[in-house]
Structures are given as structure tokens and as C-alpha cells.
Figure 1: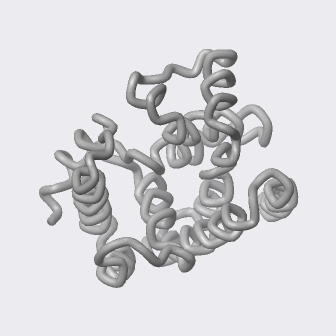
Figure 2 (figure 1 turned 120 degrees about the vertical axis):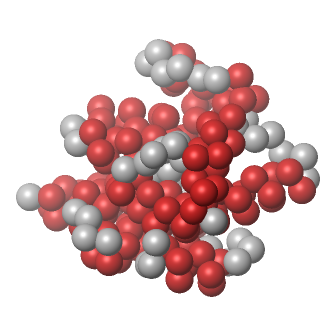
Length: 191
């Protein structure tokens, strides 16, 4: 049943996402499946969350804000100034309402794949990491180390990604979502 759902969502997303985002999405889905196998998590849950994690990514920024307002999705000031961050919240909403995903773990993984959060579930960590390490990703620092670590220790890999993300944002004065800083403060003990 879930494999049929995955096929239907793949087909739909192929028309909703641009080619680059669709390729990335498929990479995240398969990377999430591999991480789920390694870390003894539910493979179909990981595939569904990976497939849907960026389902709202290609919605224009102004439309993301309007949709969040329309559906009473709470936006922080940081998200209003950086609407690209809203794709996680809006994506979780779309996964639930359009694709009828009623699994709270999948919704949480979609919701938290960008900023992370303290004490994430195993599925949250898998999607957070799969988004960062999927095969099309080329530019991140220490990518080989993070890829290797993701298959050894999810918590350490999450800490590495958060550390590098915060350093990258600080290097060019990018705005840091407070949730990411709070999540890093929780995970830095694994470094």
C-alpha cells in the first residue's frame, strides 16, 4: 500500500518541482532509506518523509507567506524575513492535507528537516541528514566526513551538520533561525 502511495506522490512531485529539486528529492528519499536500513528505522516512513520533505520548496516566497496566513501556520519574524525557511512548515501541512499523511513521525521529520530541533526522533535525524548528504550535494564542507558519520552515529552527524551550517551562515552574515541555535546547543555535546 505504501509503495503505491510513494509511486503516486513521486509522479505528482515530478510535475510540481523543478528538475533540480526533483532530483534532490529522489536522492533524499533513497539516502533516507539507506540510513533507515543502517539504523534500524522504518524504511517506508523514511522514504515517504524524504520524498515529501521539500514538497513546498518550489512555491514562490510571497505565496508561501500567503498560504501560511491562509491556513494559520505560525510564522516567526525570521521566517517572514526569510520565507524560504517556510517550506518545512508548509510542506508538513501539504503532506498532511494534500497527500493524507497522518503519521506524526513523518510530519515531524518534514517539519524539522531544515532547522532541526533538540532531542529529535530517529526519523527526524535521518531526514535532516539525508537532506544534507544526498548524492547531488557537492558544496558542503566536510561532506565526506559527515556522510561517513551519518552511517555510524546519527547524533554526531547532526552535531557536525549544525556546527557547519552555523559557521557558514556566520561567515557571510546570514540570519540564523533561533531554533537552529537551540538545536545545536543540544547536539554539540556529541562533537
